[in-house]
Length: 205
Image (cartoon, rainbow, N blue to C red):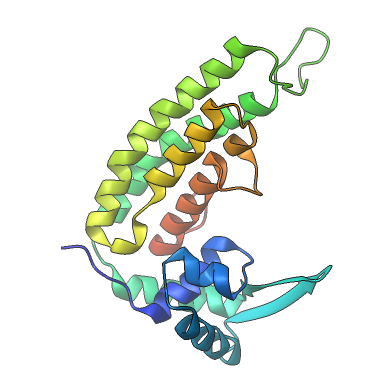
């Protein structure tokens, strides 16, 4: 049976996954009650696990080093299922393919410039990248299902990736690699962070 995480874990974990986020974004990440989320954020701030910062009038919470350690302690105490280790091993080859596909989406080398920017005027080039990402998205369905069987908090990565890919197929090129929308790359990056946080390892380990 899938494990349901406590709000205390989910709030701190949401801050880690989102990087920098305000109260509403943290609550939205795991569909938590906003009032409870605000209380837990203030508790986490009091413990020194998160900090609030602002730039140009826009603010958000971010994890401190102590908060990262606490997050990993909570995750380790919650889940000892070997499934996450196995999924991480299966995830890594697809991670390399995803990175290569995003690079091809950003660059289209020419004889004159091997680092030429992809202006998306070559439909065949873009179609090859989209086909590769579609295959990765299919694999993600299986990975996400296995993770969600271990813990409910992993639910949704495959659907978010599929939604971003649909937007890209419709001509919205930012939905492959932009950080300003819930793009394929952003969803994948977040999943990678979720895996390494749960396992208490670093990227590339």
